[in-house]
Image 1 (cartoon, rainbow, N blue to C red):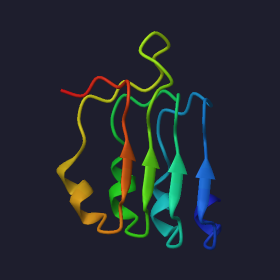
Image 2: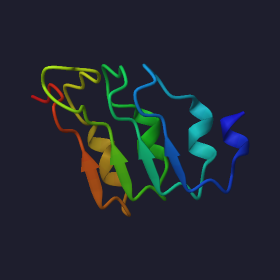
Image 3: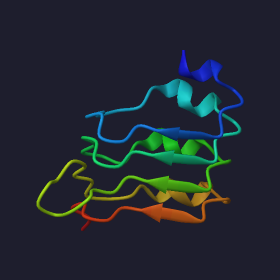
Length: 95
């Protein structure tokens, strides 16, 4: 269903305990910003590297004492996001 929202430019899935994103996210060709703060991702969602229109990704946590996302690494394929200007991973477990 989400892949049918072709013209959406911004998505906010903050504090929804999401652990993964659907593959249909790659069909959101106009998506510019995605906010995944304080969810439950243990890995960086690889599907985000397949959305070249993304300019801002926020997959941070609000503080170290209230962990949500526990991402340990960013895939090297993030370099495919040539329009990416901001990637916020604050308070994750990056190595």
